[in-house]
Image 1 (spheres, each protein chain N blue to C red):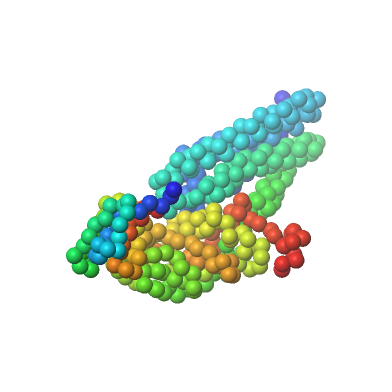
Image 2: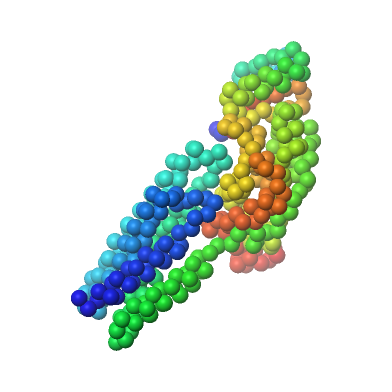
Length: 59
Length: 300
């Protein structure tokens, strides 16, 4: 498999679940900051699912 | 040693032909000076083989032809070496060349050695046919070799993207996090910060194929990757290691067969961007000609 979800960053706990590590943020600002920090660690891309959930994907 | 002038001149012409075929352009491949040394020496060997064939056959030594077999297997090895080198360097490329491009480059290097043999052979034949005119035969050998080299180089030249397609600038639009170019979704850019970079610095273009043959050629994944790689090596990319959201993208619009190219160049120059796309070589391995088939003609 080529693409892997490395992490999920979310605001609402009820919207996410499953195998990848999940990081919860308090507000929109923290959500974006977490996504940037995690993506820079892995050298991966951030994708927005439009429901206040970001996934960090290694391509 | 009555064949000495022929041997010397034909070997030299073969070697010079190989030198003429080596180009130093934006790709810097073969690398200079070490890569050049390797290929020039191989060109010298090729020239020597082409030169020796003629005197050997004139002396009745027909088994000299088996020399060519030896040369063929040696030069096939060149292709493997080039492929291995480029494949192992692929990990160090910010934007990958892709296997199709590597295969194309490797094939060109093998082929050019054979061309050196042809040129040397033609020079040797000319020199021996005109053995009566004394030292002038060397000039004749050079002339014939030069003409053949020029013709072969012309024949071996492939098309550029600009020859098979028209390239125009396109507008970049955002639908939420999605980057969209003329209705084709390119990628999902999650971070608002990155989207701002796209709005300020990115350039997009549409590559519209001229006809069904061009359309089928552009549909090749290797060709698409080659465009991404070559354009970024010509005009530079605005990205750091691991910043995958700024990687140059080439996507295909299934309805028209057009390609959409999206990239964040290091300098935002529209004309340079378009010129770079037009100058990307069409990969030999990507070329398709559906119009030569019966079914293909029925569709057109």
